[in-house]
Every structure is written in structure tokens, then in C-alpha cells.
Length: 298
Image (cartoon, rainbow, N blue to C red):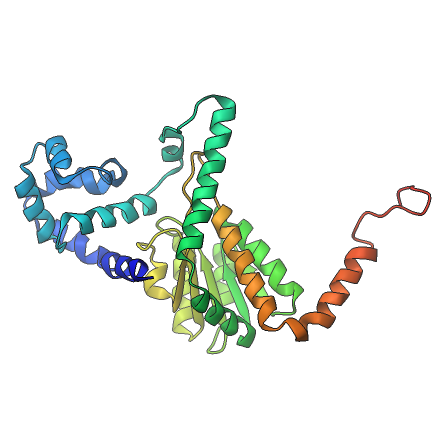
């Protein structure tokens, strides 16, 4: 938990860092800019290795890094790690060399990546914070989920499952829908934003509107440089590392499932009649494929 706090404190200065970078001389900025443009190329390098790659004396490089507000090189590397996640593009997943080759090897690498994302989620998740978020959902007058682009699938699943247990929930995926859904929010409502990388602009704008209206804001992303950090009352990380052109939402789905587990456990007894109805409809309802007594399709 302390690591999470330190990361949030460190990367909250992203705008300040950009401003300080602009204040450097053209020569200094020319040497440092490649690091900020391609952070993944430098994250795993030592100070000496970075200096060798940029043809800069390590002591000079460290002095410039400290001028940006970092006490030590380790803090700067942590910032680069988060920046690399925030700025990741589809092609980078394909360019990352997987540990195995061939079709079978690539599949194994993809699944290993998903397992690593789940492991990172499990190590970072904070049960008390998740329980606190669940209580806000149960107390909410209305819940609005902002999730567009590829993360719309997560928003749809969350909306569907929350509606199953009787919560008043809406999912907004398009820019217009997001604007309209958040315009009437007020204190007592909960707004959930799901967006990864640098964040989609229309999701951030709608989140800002909902926050100004007084809604309790929850954010889900894959990095602490996300603009969700400053706009949300509660923020959760779900890693999306992948070897494909598409981000892995395995941990995002797992986080939602963990949320649902806590949701039902908090009000297990009061939910029992509703869950019994759901179970009966799943056994006998017309939405599901059934066979008659003779084994024929009905």
C-alpha cells in the first residue's frame, strides 16, 4: 500500500515536470526529449547506460534529472515506467519481443501476460478501499458508468451485472451520451470512469462535469499518470500489459468480478429473494435454450 501512495505522490507532478522541461536550455531539452518521447526504451536502463545512449556524462544527466524535481534516479525510473504505460500504442504490443516464438509460443506468452496482470492486480488491490467503494454504490441515488472505445466492453458488463441486483445504473459510451448523462448528476450519485493510457478526452471531460456537479467519482485505469487520478475520489489500477495490438483487459474484468463479490457479500441476506428470482428465470426462463422431456429442442 505504501508503494501505491508513493507512486501517486510521485507522478502527480506530471504537469510540473513538463513545465520544468520547457524551462531547460535547448541543448538540455534536446538530450532529454528522447527519454520522454520513448520512455519504454529507457525504463530498464541504469543511469550510466542512459548516459552512454544519449552521449551525456552520467553526473550531468543526474543533475538535469534533479532539476526536473526528482531526488534520485530511481524516482525518475518509476516515473518513466508510468509514462511508458500511459503513452503505449497498439504497435508497441506487437514490437515487444515475447519470450517464446511460433504460434503456440505466442499464445503462451499472451496468457502469461494476462496472468502477470492478474498477479499485479492481486498484489495491489486494497480490500478496505474496495469495500468503501461498494458502500458508496449501494447508497447511490444513481450510478453512471463512463466507458468508451475498447473499454466499453467493461462498462457494458459492469452495467449489466449491477442492474441484475437492482441498482439504478446507466452506461455511457459515446461523447454525446456521456455529456448528457453527467449533466444532471448531483450529490448522492456515483460516477465510474474507465479509461486507459492517457485517457480518452471525452471521458475525462464528462468526468470533470460530473465531479463539478457533486457526484462521487471512481476511476479505473492502468497508470498513475492518468488524468483520472486528480478528478476521482477513489482510483483503482488494473494493469493492461500485452503482446497483442489490443490491451489486455483481463485484470479489468477480474477487478469488476471482485467488486461484484463484495457487493453481494455486503447485502447477501437482503439480496437473497432477488437472486432466487434470477436463478429461477435462468432455470426455466424463455431466454435460455431448453430441451423437452423427449430430448427435443423447445
